[in-house]
Amino acid sequence: MSATLLSGLLAAACGGGDEGEATGSIDGAVKDGAQSQLAGSDGATTPDAPEPTSMEEWEALWATERAAIVDGLTSGGFGRSADGTMLTGPEGFSVDLSACGAGWSDTEGVTADLIKIGWPGPQSGPAADFGNAPRGAAAVLGAYAAEGAFADASGGPRDVEVIIRDDGYDAARTVPLVDEMIDSDKVFGLTLMGSANAFKVYDKLNQRCIPNTFLVTGHPAWGDPVGHPWTSGGLLSYSTEAILWGSYIEEHLDEWGGKATVAALVTTNDMGTAFDSSFRAYLAQSPRQADIEYVTESVEQNTPNIKDPMTTLAAQQPNVYIAMVPGTPLCTQSIIESAENGMREELDAAFLSSLCKASTYIGKDKVGGDGSVADGWQIIGGGLKDFNAEASADDPWIAWVRERLADAGHDYRTSANFGTGAALGWGMAQSLLVAQELPGGLTRSNFILAVRSMDMTNPALLPGVGFNMNGGADAYLVEGSDVSRWDAAGQRWATESTVELSGASRPCAWDQATATCG
Image 1: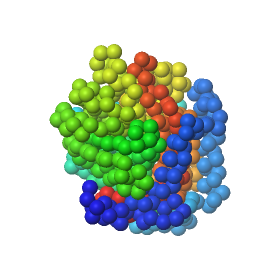
Image 2: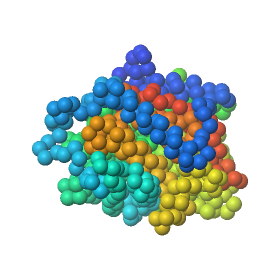
Image 3: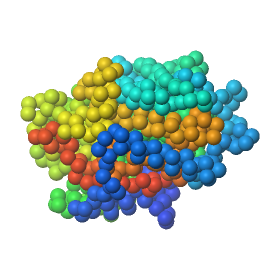
Image 4: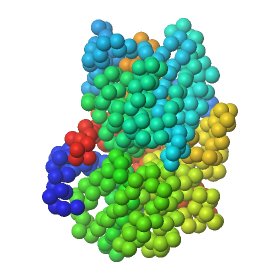
């Protein structure tokens, strides 16, 4: 990267300054927190209490946590104004409902017996496995509905319909599907998959005041409670992940001889751009910048083969490799190609992106043989438990979800995305339950207020990783992560440390032209 371009990147981003303000596209508070927690062998956070050991204990905990959210919102006087024109929430969160447009309804998509959620995503093509996420969410939401959890004003049960349609992971195809869902199906809200897909419609959905939450993408743009109050993500931000990579490399640099060449395979999409620009900005402010060389090769997200770019990267003789790729065959191919071209044996650290965190991408049935070729690969895992690993069978939440999937005719072993969808479906379910307890019952405005006030223990996350937001101040649900290493013998991710940064990330008004937070 040229000095001129690097200066432009930094100048265009959130201004530097005191009190943890962002420098470039790097959030200072996140960087400081990551570095302090990763330093030393005791970087892992410690949970306040042991996890529940049964679903009954989990449900009791969640009931208490939901009640605390409802009490905090009602005692704070938050909600829709008496004249119906404003929605207010914690830390200055507000939405002008009078600007939602003619014909907008706060209860569209909700009837006495049904809640409709739209979920366009890939059901075909190379990324079709992502299409199992809405099935995982539907299994969780359906189970709650079957128990009568989503009651109308008279106490009658409501079902939840998750409308799944195929966009082939093509952002151009996402647009007409979303139009159909909001204009014909008249859904209550939507969830989207893929950063480029979400960018195509998030302005429209926010202008029309339609909840667009728990997105299956970690793009930092979803943390914009002012410009896009109806949109929120469900995964660890890609920019935070990049900071954690950089912090880990700095922490271990001297162990590797004081210098490093970092090679990255970057997909040519919004996700890859966010990873790459955030990591470059981290290096630009690093006191070890002169000691770290960064080289990249780009690939299309649907490319069938990465042998050539991986061979090119191997020729640079890196000692760190990062796969800045989505959870597709590119995860598995990174492992296989780096072994075949000899790069892996020379690496001090090899990282997959958080989107690759599942045994279905790295297990021996994917990489071949006894699976040893994947041993020692690392990941900033986004805090998610490995839903597919056999070692997770005794986890009460995972066992319960696997049963619900089986009831729906799905084999959990076939896709990591069932678990991701279930984690986000749980978040949707809890937000619906909170919203229906607020004055006015289940409405779009109460739902987004519940999402923006979320502070609960997500059973799909590792102990010590939070799941919370705080109105206008904290716009990211997940800001913690595990640092894990693949144990080929046990066919599982072994957690080495946990970083928890809830509340550290500043909101982000994303500038697509510069790929930075403005």
